[in-house]
Length: 459
Image 1 (cartoon, helix red, strand yellow):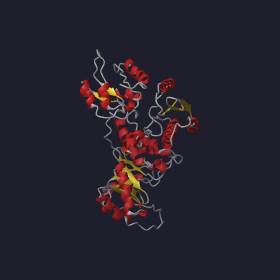
Image 2: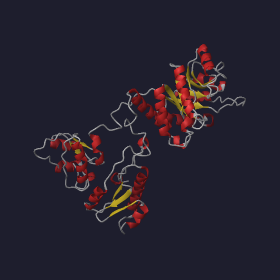
Image 3: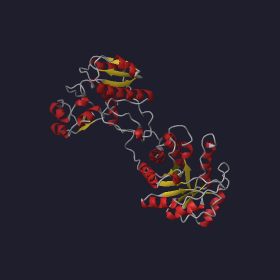
Image 4: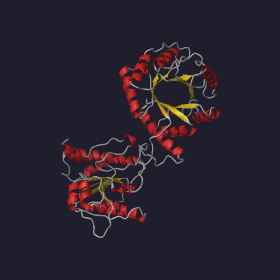
C-alpha cells in the first residue's frame, strides 16, 4: 500500500519480486500524495481490500504512525509496516544481511590496554575501563611505562591499588610490565595475566598464580622462546605465546608466518596477538585491519588479541574487534566467506547503493502538488524539487542560489542546508541518502530525529 507519488516506483520494485516468484503483489494506492504522512487510524478508515483477491499479508509504508492493529482488526489479515524506503522492500521477503545469523558465539578474547596508566587518576582509569567493557573487552590491561634494560626506572607501586579497585568492580585485569615489583604487586592484587616474559625474567617473575604471555627475546629469529617455555613449564606456570606481529615495512609478512610456525610447533598452546601493532601503525581506518586480523586469528587458533585505542583512526577498535570476532567465528566454522553476515563493519560506504533512475525522479517531481521541498541524492547529483521546480546539480551552494525568492524562511533554510550537506556527503562517499533520516555509518551510526518528529515534540 502506498500514496500516489510513490506508486510508479513501488510497482517497479514489486514487479521484480513477482518475476522472481517471491510474492504475488497487489499494489493499493490511497488518495494521499506522500505515503509517509499516513496514520494508522486514517488508513483504517480508507483502506478496503480488493474483491476477488486472496490477500494474506498487508504491508504499510514504513513511516506510517499509530496503532496498526486497528487496520488488522478491520481487514481480518496480518498487517505490518515495511521499510521506510520502498527500494528496500525486497529484503523484507528474504533474509536481511545483518540478521538471521547467530553471532552470539565467539572464542577470541579481547584484552584492551589502558596506556600509561601511571599518568592517569583512578577516576580516569575506571572510566576508560568501563568504556572498554561496554564495547566488548573481556580483560583490562594496565599498561605501565616501558623499562628498557638498565634504565633504572622506579616501579609504579600504585598499580596494586588500581588492580584492587578494578577487581572490586568485577573487571578481569592484566598487567603489562617487565618490572618485577610492578608484576608482583599487580598479581598479588588479583591480576590474572602478565604481559610479558622472556629469558630476561622467566626465572624471577613473581606471578602469584597468574598466567603469563611468552614473547621471544628477538622476534625476527624467535630466539629465546623455546627456552622461556621450558622454564615456565618446569616452574608450573601457565602461559600463552605471542610471536609478535610487526608493523608493515618492518617485517609484517614474516611475522604472520611466525604465528603459523608457532602453531605447528606448539599445536595445543594458547596464542595471543597484539593487533595494536598494526592498527596504531597503519594510517587507515582500523575496522578493516581489525577484521582481517580477527579472521587470521580465527583460522590459526589465536584465542586472544591485545588492542589499544590511542590514535584517532583506531578509537573504536574494541567495538570493531567484538563484532569481527563474532562474524569470523560464524564464517570459519561454517566455511562461508565473511560477507553478508553482518554489515555493521561497513562504515565509510554503504553495503548496497540504491540506484534511482532519472525518469523516476522526474515523474515524482511532475506529480508534486505542494511547496514542501524534497531532496534526493542520485546519479552523482543533488535533486531539490517541489510543485514549482526541479533543480539538479552537484553544488549545494549553486542550487541554493537558484531557489526562487521567498522559497525559504530562516529556519527552513537551516534545515535545507543541513539536509543538502548530508546529501553531498552521501554522494561523495557512495552512501544512500533519505531525507529526514540519518546517514548510515554501520556500527557508528548516530540516529537523529526527523524535522517532523522534532516539531511534534515541540523542540
